Structure formats: structure tokens, C-alpha cells
Length: 391
Image (cartoon, rainbow, N blue to C red; front, side):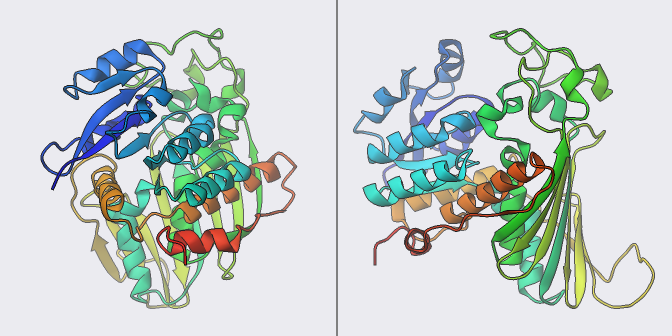
């Protein structure tokens, strides 16, 4: 089996994915790199011997020897770069979110269908052990039929990761209910077996709006990835534009009747996601999301609170970043490029998570007014449900 030859566009924080795709002699090799910053491009080149280097993604796409492209550029470039890749006939891995507007998502999906080029969206939480464990528990009927899902997202390093660069600018992200929450909204949909149809939300820029900012075109401070500031109000060197919310609360009604809630805060002392799923015959809750952590189930009662629950499931061991999810998602992507077929991730599901987050952001900026989530074109959805094949 010859190695797939893969190009990478964008060498920022998520460029680590390229290392999981670079498996010479084992199925795939990174053969080309692109970044608009020549210093970043040079620093990454040593990881991939002989890779073609360019600052212009069109030059990368012109190479006939590439089978696929991993796109990990900033969110506001996803639509343009992904469509360029699809029109060049290169299978695409597109890091979440699919785009920063519903229209942008639909434009990408239509381009994939029009060109017949394979599109894969990197919602890696579907490959996290804790998420797959929760889904398996639900599908086996351990808590009956799921009726409501609650997610709390505590983001301890939010001020460093999301308010010191372009993430804080709504023209680049729409907002963190889309950019940061897209993973969790996708998981809610996957666990519930449905998509959000109506949302309302509240949120505010409560803490980071008044802290010291850098001048435009000034780079982030050295060591920002290793030396987090605490307490949150002591943070400085923030992005020159900050107009996204650092606290948000979102309510959802899904097309199958499930009601869900998502809450996000960017100035907590600890980082953790907490899922609760309540069904007709019990509830489950995750306690951590790494190897050795647990998902507990309560399915007898009624009673007072019982800390041990009725069943405790151990999150499976894994290696690699994001609980092994990045390794697994690259493996699935390479298999999809080579063989096609239906995958655990879904471009339609990626679009629906963006749509839910986008409309929730519109709601919170409109005083909590409920908004309907635009439906996807049924024919377009059917194309992707068939594994990106025409009938």
C-alpha cells in the first residue's frame, strides 16, 4: 500500500495533527506545508523531511502529487480555503468549526457535492473515549430514552487561549458559543440522536473587556502557552479587539423533542467538561474525561443523592492528545480518503453544530430572543448521509 501524500495548510496550534498524519511507510506522509508566516513555516519544516514549503496555499494545491489536504487555518478562512481545496480536487480535512456562519457552511457543503471531492470535518470529540463510552451506555438503553442533556464547560485558560488573539474578535469567529462550543454542541446532537431546531441564549463580556490590551499588529507575549496568569483579572497583553462573550448560557430544543442546555465560562480556576444525560429510566454523568476517569449511572430509585451511583464505567485508556482522539480521527480521515464511505464524523452534523451556535449567538446579542435554526437542504443532507455519493 502506497502512502497517501498529504499537504497541511496552517501551522498554528492545531498543526500537531500533522504529526499524527505523518506515518511514513504506514499509510500516509506529510509531503507539503503552507503557512503565511515564513518563520513558522521554517520552524515546522524540520519535522517533515523533504516536504514542499510555501506561503501561498494555491501553490500547494497546484501540486499533482498530493492526495489530500489538512486545513487548520483560522476560522474566518475556512470557507475560502476549503472551497479552493475542493475545487482543486483534493480531499479535505477541515478543522472545526466548519465555518463561522450558516451560509458559509452550506457553501462548503455545496462545493463538495458539486466537485465530487471528499470532505471530512474534524470533530475529534466523537473519538474521545468518554464520549464514545457515554454514547454506548445510551444506545444500550441503560438509562432508557434520553430526554434532556446538560453540559457545563469550565475553561480555566480561556483568558490566555481565546482572549489574547483573533478568537476574541467576532469578525473572525462569530463568538465562542460557535467557536469553542461547536464540539460540545456536536456531542449533544450525537448523544441525543437529533439536531437543534430552536435556541435562546444569554451571555456577556463580564471580565476580559476592561483588561489591558496589546496594540494592533503586536504578537502575543512569549511563553503564553506555558505560563498562564492567575487570578483572571491579572491578565494582560490581551488582543486589541475583544467583542466576544466570556460567559454564555444556551438552551436548545432538538427535532426529536430532547431539551438541552450548554453553559460556558472562561475564567474558572479549573478546566473540565461535565455532561449529564437524563433518560426515562436513569441518568449518567461524566467525572473527568481522561483515562481512569469515570462515567457514573443512576438507574434505580427514587432516593437521595448517592455518590457511588449504581454503575461506574471507567473511561478507556488512550494515548495521544485529546484522550487519543487526534490519533483516531487522523486514522479515520486517511481511511476515508483512501476508501470513502460513512464516517463517525459528519459534515452535516458539523453544519448543524455551527448553525445552533450561530443562532444562539444571535439570540444572546438580541436579549435572549428565541431563534429558529435554519434547516439544511434535504438533498444536500442525503448526499452526505450516503457517504458523499450521488444516488
